[in-house]
Length: 298
Image (cartoon, rainbow, N blue to C red; front, side):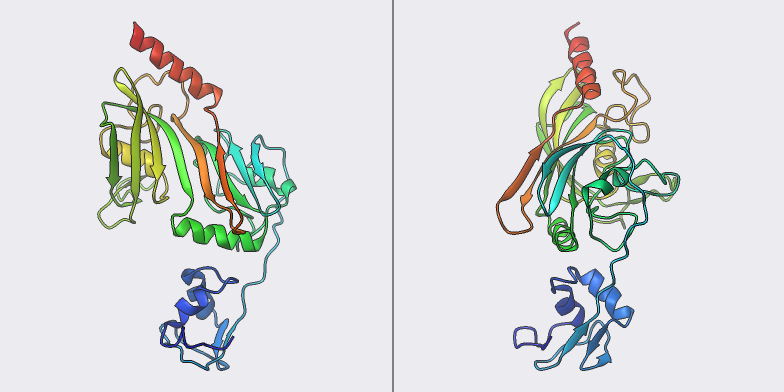
């Protein structure tokens, strides 16, 4: 593509990252480093300031088909169109294959629904994830173009993700937590608030006060690993039933954290309309909530 006047003087990685077929500055930098971007037939550094009239050639990565085999995995499809799915993942199901979880993942169950997109053949269509024992909604792409657009929307914080959490109280009626998160330097199996970590922002609103517990509506502004669980622990209101970040006390009969991805809302990547999907609390969380309310009334 020839460089026009609007892009003249801009960094090469910025210009390439804005291309539809690339989708992000990070991917542009990877392509530049791999020698897949040429300016007037020659490789250039990512900081190269392009000039009007130069011709940029980009060879995107070839799609590597997944060699995973479909499996029967429990989940519910809440929204379906030719570009994407919104699925409701039950607790106990891992989102995608990883060490120790080579089979039985949500991805294995989705393969029969023609999910696609992304450069990791073990994660076709996956844009974001939920912890194994967190239930609720995920959006999944069905083609490369939609995957790129959803990824860009996620980075721009255009996808609204709302959770329901039961936490140990008391809490303020509404509050936000703005604390960076990274791998815990002392316990590498968990995350923690770390000064040099990545930006992480969580907003919460109290729906109901239940004795010494609080039912919260929680909205993610960023999406770090274990973000809600880490942030709630960091302000002294850990999620009920959380085996890693919670308290060692009775957990209303739960064998997992009381955390559910209850709502997703975002502009459709095609530019037509808005997708808004809700998921009711699953039976185990409804039962735990009933026990909490009953205990309060005693």
